[in-house]
Amino acid sequence: MQLRTPDEPGRSAPLPATMPTAVLGRSGLVVSVLGWGQPGLPDLPGNTVATADAYQHRGGNFLDTAPSYGASEELIGTHLAERRRHVVLATKSHPVDADQTLRDVETSLKRMKTDVIDLLYAPHGCWDEERFQNCFKKGGVIEGARRAVERGLAKHLAFSFDYFQGLDIRRLRALIDTDLFEVVQLPYCLVQVEPVDEEIIPYARAKGMGIIANFPTLNGLTGREWGVFYPDFAGLADTPGQATLLAILCHPQIDCVLVRFSSPARVEENCAAARRVAVMTAAERQEIRRRVEAHGTVRYLQRSACPASPPSLRFRHGMIYFDLFTRFGFGGARPVVEQFIQQLEAHPDMAWDAETRAAIEQVRRACPVLLTK
Image (cartoon, rainbow, N blue to C red; front, side):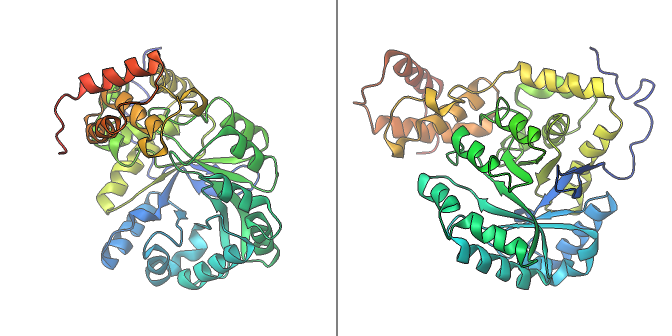
């Protein structure tokens, strides 16, 4: 279909003042479709308050933090605690054991000057088998998460993964199958670089779980440049960051996208994408998804397709960034590709199969000059 331009009937009407909300699955939590990922807190306290004012003005109500996000929890407690009844507050615990999870929760409550966490991610990241097993063993993270809810320290439970964290289907399905978690947070971007669309998102949705997308710009890559996606968003987005958010917000099974709001101006920019979604028809949102998905996925989306290589080489990671650089047009991926070439040169005698060796030669030809030396 042909998307209407802003000058055509139905698109010239002003955007709503606030962004839409969504229900996070069976948790029942109602959140703005853009959540504030708190690693993006401004450094200066005055800017934190001004940014919070702008976010709240646009209907924002979801603060997502973690003990590992620097001074984030302290800043919330110092400058945003008076807004507590207006926000849904989430924090995290890494997979160690039950006692550590409870200590994390108690520390977070004290820092944020609140008596309960609305959404607790426990575990946050299971990037190796040891951390994964720490979730399920007696005295493990899941036991600690249950105890936090039983003691009234947390209302609802979730788990989360980031990019390249050993995010395999088996671990994800096992966590979902506990039926303990009501929300899952997964990495999602313009380009599919993790295998979540085919199995995990539909499987979690079938279990009544809410879906939150994290790191939507792939650590800023797609927020700074358009790549091959510019024609897909003509008349709909003014900046690459808006295009990224619009694409994910048009996904029919994603409820909320976490964004790093570093200033009031960034709030206005990003929330404009969320407000745009509110006036789009279902057919228009579907067309955006069709356009984005037509560009395809990265090679080695499935880890099982990746050839054996030394752990230090990070072959899949390097090939993903090579695809982002060459096939999807993101020049910001080049430094990672150049580093990958240097790593390849350190392992010249690997017994690669013919297909993989051809791919390696293609990488070398694409970046003949190493700018990062």
